[in-house]
Length: 120
Image 1 (cartoon, one colour):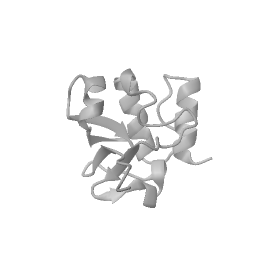
Image 2 (cartoon, rainbow, N blue to C red):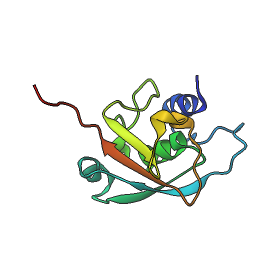
Image 3 (cartoon, rainbow, N blue to C red):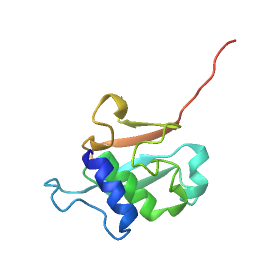
């Protein structure tokens, strides 16, 4: 189980728990851009801030701040929801360390809805 998965599964068991106490990194505030579909669950805001040292920690912090995002970003199994794409700056976290991708104050996380379909 990855660190991001462990963080989210522990958060489900203990909602007051946010960060892995064994995690040596320091949490930072990161800007997160939300797609139109998720803004209603975040008070209508297009940009919010979440605290964490990794993408998983930041997403959990967003769910803590905006409970309406529960199940919209991460599955109950602690994996990135397949209907959203998450980028740190311009890099897709699926090709990085997924929820374990490290973030800094200078980073911007963008959440985009996944687009499916095509010509028949």
